[in-house]
Amino acid sequence: MVFVVVVSVVLVGGSISYIVHLFRRDSRIRSQGRDIRALVEDVRFLGSNDGGSANIKYRLSWTEDGVTKEVEGRDTVSAFYSSRLQKGCEIDIKYLDDNNIMFVFDK
Image (cartoon, rainbow, N blue to C red; front, side, top):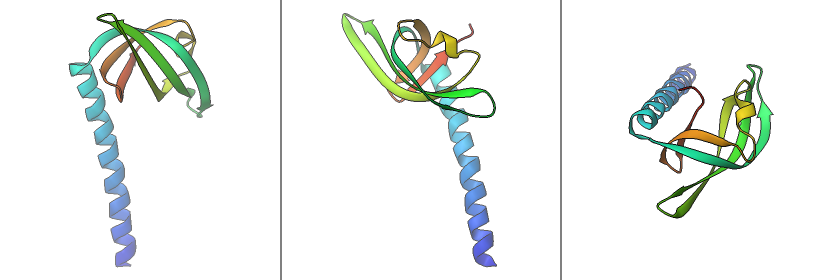
């Protein structure tokens, strides 16, 4: 019985801490991230969920100080905005580092 309680507490605590981590990450990107206009080099549809969101793999590039910067990643975007993420389109992003990027669809 003690084992079940310990495992339950660990699972609930881990889930809550992960959600808090995601909120803190988004807040940090919004406050410290730079506004950049990036070119969508490649985007691939990986799957979707019941809520209408699409999981994508993307490659973005932009030029800073004469140097082309390129990043790759995975993200989940609303199906409503997925038409803006097509190869060859330009998209606004908030960039903190290569692992912390946020798409900006509404200004």
